[in-house]
Length: 114
Image 1 (cartoon, rainbow, N blue to C red):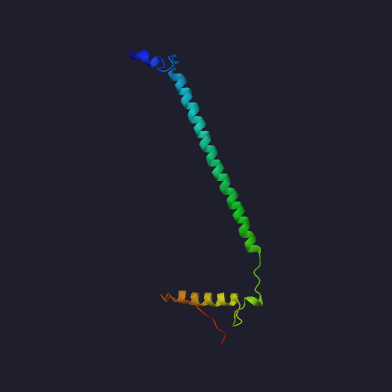
Image 2 (cartoon, rainbow, N blue to C red):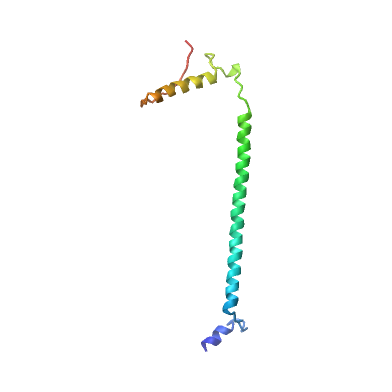
């Protein structure tokens, strides 16, 4: 009686086809292959998009580096010292204090011409 319940569909009454072990193995292998190919395609797409993004950002960085920075007299402060000179002074002072290995919390707030 139990086998007869498993061989027919309860709702429609149709007979359920019997699938052999060989057939079920083939279905499983085909399913594994399709799943593997799908994952491989997704990995390739993510890799390709990463390469494209790195290429675009690299080109943008090259363009930013290629543009020369021109210091105009307008960028000079009220004391007449340009921004480049201020940055050079700050870098020199901080390099000096780093070579001394001091724990001084040095900050340059203003540079005046004497």
